[in-house]
Length: 277
Image (cartoon, rainbow, N blue to C red; front, side, top):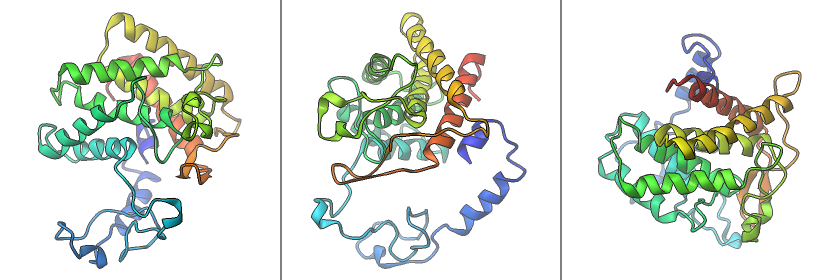
């Protein structure tokens, strides 16, 4: 839905309305065991699993994977910030400010952020830049030096690791080998994650010299995606870019190579036209 809306599909017609009804039907409206010890009084929200209302987002206890519970991560935090802002929360309120502080603290020395549910630093950096970019927008009014520095460092890292073919790629080895960060054959999904992050950083901080370099990188990335789009309009990723448990098992989310490139090209088009969309 996000990708279709970004690309200009009418939100009052199918398939958006049909998908909206599907989502509304699956919002959790019953109280399960999660309520014991929870600060949340009423049920609400959606779980990752299908129809698991009583135990939302409680996966099998993967104790042998050293992950009985999920720790805080930059990618989920970034998505949460954007969701809270989209829902109308003031960026100066404590939940957003605390989440932004967490993101700033988690930025690596090289300027990237790690990714938990997508491989890896390209995913984490792209999402973090999108969240911080929204916080740095005129509407959010956060013009702090720390935020500007984080955006600049993240943007520079993505530009540095762009492949010669215009795309981005990162091997799953990067979860075990730091030298593999941002290195690997280009894929459609990872190229899209980088494009979305770069586009957000440029919109938030359009310094002429640095944004010019980032815009040139975006031009090459857009060409990469256009050249590799298949006749039926889809893309194909040869390499897996989804993550189950780092160092244990990985996944191929077939949708990753479809909706992320579409959203990235839409963001690129808005940036080129000067529209915030």
